Image (cartoon, rainbow, N blue to C red; front, top):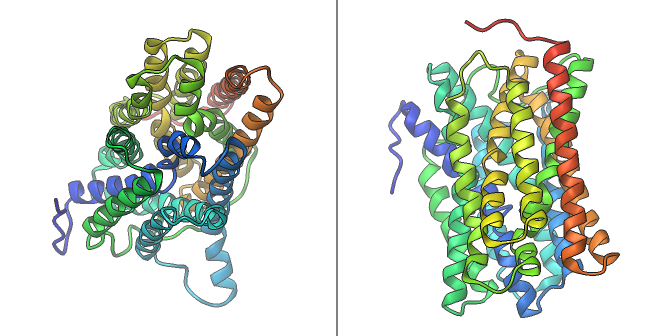
Length: 404
């Protein structure tokens, strides 16, 4: 499969380039670890505390990458040089993801935390710059409705990675084989989008800039957006492990992660169908509530059906939250939106970092792993409900101008 790459790529080409870029950076670079984790635990190459550290290292890298994206224009300006080109940052992040994913196939566990950390940095760089580049290009080309296609990328990567791991387990493959297969897939997708991701987006999104004057409205919005990072990350890190701790052995246990990925894709498409008159903050509040229900459904009502529905509900709002959040950041900071995008992504990253250590601590202090994970998921769901309340209050204290 190859994306056409003439001198003036179509809106479909731009949207697909964004989809594939996020599939590599998020679906593989970040979340291929989740379906492979039960395999790594079964092989004994890592234990649960070690797995928690690997996940946390990735999320710390994601935070650092987001901060770099937000701050780099100021640093380059101080040195008297123009900011980095967005398209080159996307390409560099994708190439790094391929190499870092391949590195996880090496039998050198001492290197894995560093590799996961750097993969997190690359994921944030690709997410921020792909969002800015694609949103800018599609808006300038008069097709903002196609931006939802971009955010199908993480879901596609999650679904494919989960199915590949299920097939690999049936074939008796090892975790190292899985990492190598994911690296090969990432390399193919990177080669597909490479010719398309070039040139500037528009004058507002070619590269991140400062977020502008920081107001109370922006502060509360960033905080609420960050709460969603904590709210989903325990499920996104440990879903297959939680399922195996809570339910009896079954072939279906390996399908909850792909179901989550399908939900991500469906939610991204549905987000673009939302009427323009709906306030993005109200939409975010609704997404948070749906995700909160999905987070706790499987542990409150254990069973294959409830885990499947819960996985779908966690996935549906996953990138829809990113879609609405980035659109709201553009509204709040119209002159330099990518700066606020980077800040939101950084605070989101802080929420992610807090998730796995809290889960490990609660599991360690509970009578069973299942009980510990249940407590962690309840805390995650509570943070999502709090975030929903903040968004609802924001929409009423600072109403946006009417949209025709």
